[in-house]
Image 1 (cartoon, helix red, strand yellow):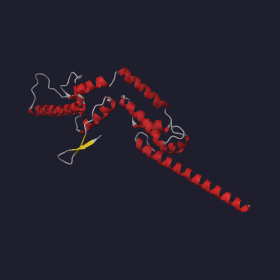
Image 2 (cartoon, rainbow, N blue to C red):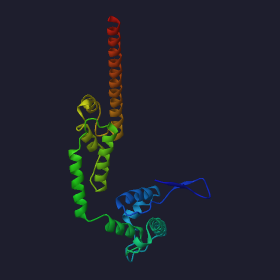
Image 3 (cartoon, rainbow, N blue to C red):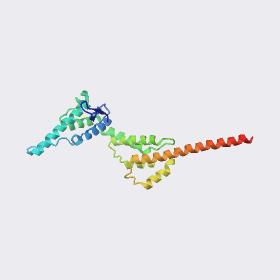
Length: 232
């Protein structure tokens, strides 16, 4: 998330993500921003209004006023993130939750479109395999991109699902290290980045061995050529 420095101090604060029409990306950034301010639960659940006829205690009234003040702050962040043209299309703006829900309903897409996108992503994830000559970083990036898109479409993607997919779709040159990782680790607690590091070390070792073999072959051929030259 981008940061900016306050004019009156050295405090660095996050810049409010501006809505550019790409709802999925923006909502992810905005949700993270709201969590950093500890306002996310208010956006998800709204203000807890008292039941009609119920008399609140002083403590309950104080809590309600604090919620309303926080809600005003969240609304202010949303107003700064959304262009006036978009804001005018939102009918209910009484609470931050109403604004957030209206944006999601308008821009997140219909359930049919979302389901179609998810089905396509699931198919891509299922048939994904590492190609010969493809770098480890490139394959991980490709796999995680699809997995992240599936998560955005509400598919539950735990680390172990991605890890098992990667391990069973590597090229044969990784067979030994894949077997070693499966035998020495509990995949349910292994993180994706721990797996990535382990495989990178193995890839670097293989690359180093190949370079050494090539250098040895060049040296051997050179020595053989030199001996033939002296024998003439």
